Length: 30
Image (tube, helix red, strand yellow):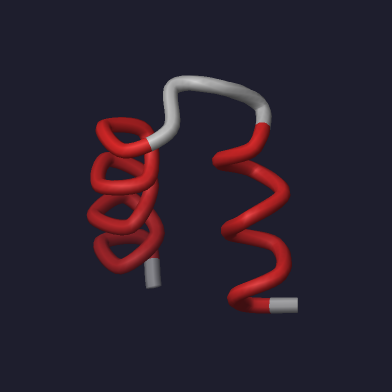
């Protein structure tokens, strides 16, 4: 899962360089 989170984190960071990334990731996995 570490790889998945890292990959998603990188893609999300590239798309949105803001705190929204965390919220988006949480919504996607939460």
